[in-house]
Image 1 (cartoon, rainbow, N blue to C red):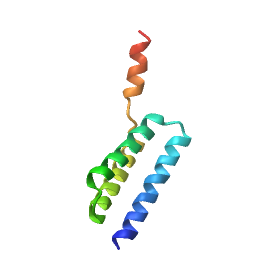
Image 2: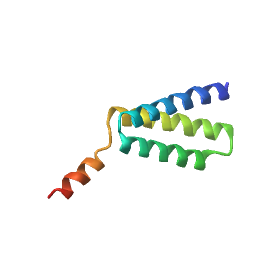
Image 3: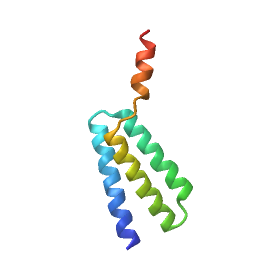
Length: 81
């Protein structure tokens, strides 16, 4: 059962990453991908740890999809001054 949940969560995560890349949301994409790698590294080692990491990253990915990060916009506006 854990493997099936992990597969579904990872599929959602990859689909969200693909959508963000295709719609040129590179700040989101970079942030999501780095979180997926970091969480997998820190919590990997057991199936349960990897499952928690993938589900946590998918929830964060949904949040960033709804509320995109603004640090790139803020950085660009400060460079125009």
